[in-house]
Image 1 (cartoon, rainbow, N blue to C red):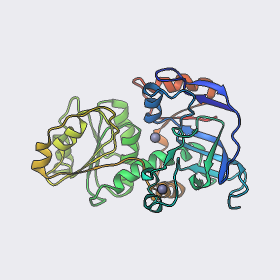
Image 2: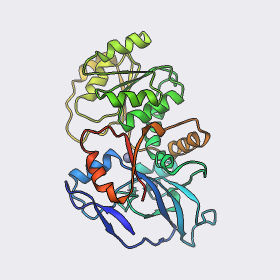
Image 3: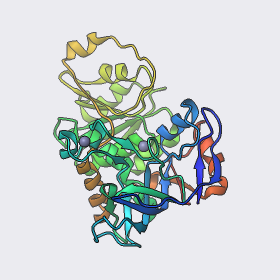
Image 4: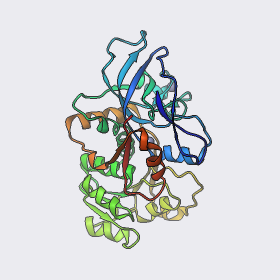
Length: 336
Ligand SMILES: [Zn+2]
Ligand SMILES: [Zn+2]
């Protein structure tokens, strides 16, 4: 099969031939229909020396082969949204659907081959039925939408409370989309990049602000009459947790979704004075995945404005590389 494979830190992906996977016990093989590029894929390719890895964890596909031990509900031709974590299935975390916290958790596209390939092997426990009427490009959005759903699910505030979202990239846009869908009266997205603000409005943000030219706190007060009780940090650059604390209301809450991979200094005094609560989140649990599929199935959630590009293998390595630089893209999909 064709696959996009890492060649080591900082080197471009290579499009090469790999052996077709065969199903191990309890596994399905899916033909990958669409796989989104995530910021974490870009980070791994650039900074982590893992040559020979098939990245990609935001994908959906069609069942191609089934291990005989797998229950007969899975047949060839079934459409699958992939929950890209494999885990023991028995510990307290797995029981609660928090596979990411299982000591034996393995991520597809990191610890095992992922979706930047024609075929992928996955444990049957990673397979969720994707409704037939949903386009594959939407199926590939289940995973990033689950990230955003989880962030809001772990934000202990009323669903209708106005929300400030820091960052209008793929994560921030998905958080804005879900926040509006869950009933937030106002959702303001702060981002210095104009096209990201435009995108945020297209997915339902009621207002946007350019933090390079405007005071975010003033803008939020002008919109809602008060400082934000909920701030969701979706960028992961150093300094932004401090920004979130600075702008939050007294007794407010900060949810940190942005993955900051370097040291970040902050002065706790502001957060102390305001008695802020802070929740760090990573991944999702099964319920977040199920909520995303249900909202897509009913049509309640429309992530299509976030889909800015689709490419086959021919142009994929260059397109992948381009996403590491300033770009007007939001979510780019490989359609093998
Ligand atoms: Zn991701
Ligand atoms: Zn477990």
